[in-house]
Length: 354
Image (cartoon, rainbow, N blue to C red):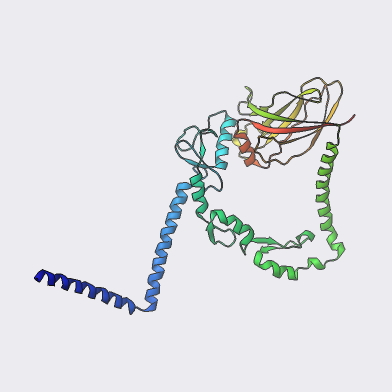
C-alpha cells in the first residue's frame, strides 16, 4: 500500500513540474520566444548547409573538383569525373599514345570500361546553386531556366539595340529605359551606320546560302561517309595524325589527312586544341580538277560542327589542298572527338563544270 502511494505521489510531482515549465513558457516574453525560434531555424539551416557542403565535396569531379553540370562518368573503382574532364583525359592519352587512367587510382578508363553514374547526376541536379544575377539559391536543374527567363536581375538588352542602343541592364529596368530611350527618335541619317552593319552581316549569310544553292545545281556532286583513323610517325612521336581509307569520287581516288594543332611542335602541351584537314588526290589527273568541298558530321558521329566551304584546283603537280580548319565549334568539342577511336564525318564534293 505504501508503494502505491509513493508511485502516485511521484507522478503528481512530475506532472506538477511539467505544468510549471509549461506555465513558465506561457509567461515568457515574446522577444525571448522569437530568439528561441530563430536559434532553432539557424541550427536547422546550418545543419542543411553542412550536409550540402559535404555532399558537394563527395560528388565533385576528381579532376577539376567542381560539381558536374551534365554527364558524370566513373572508373571501375567508383571515382567520378565530369564529361569534360573525362573526354580531356582520353584525348590526352590518345595524343601521347598512352593508356588513359583514373587520376585517383590509376586504373584504366575508356568509353567501354567506364560507365555513367545516373544516381550522382540526379543527386547533383538537386543540390542548391546560386543564381549569378540575384544570388538566390535554386536547385541546379532549375537555376538555368531561372537565369534565362525568370530572374528579375538578369542582364537584358534594349529592344532598340538593333538600331544602335548599347544599354544593358537588369530586366526589371528595361521598361523604364525603353520609355526614355533616344534611339527611336533619331533621324534616318543617324541610323544608317547601324543599318549598313546589319546589311553587311546579312550579305555574308546570304552569300553562304547562295553559294551552297549554286553548288547544288552542279551536274557532278559526290558525298562520301569517311572514317578518320589515328596513326603516328617515328619522326614526330608527339604528333597525332588521322587518315581515311581511299575512296572514289568523280572516277578518281581520294584521301583525307588530318592533324592536331598543325602549327605546334608538341600539341600535348596545349589545352587549346583544333583539327586541320586536307583533301588529297591519289590518282593521276590528266586535266585540272576544280572542286568545292565541305566537311559535315557523319551519320554515326555526334560532334557539333560549323561547316565552311573550301575551293581548290587539283592537278598532276598540285594534288594536295592546303590544310583547312576542321569545322568544330570549340576546344572542348575537339577533346570529345579525340576521345573516340575514330572520327566519323561526311565529305561533300562539287566538281566545277569545265
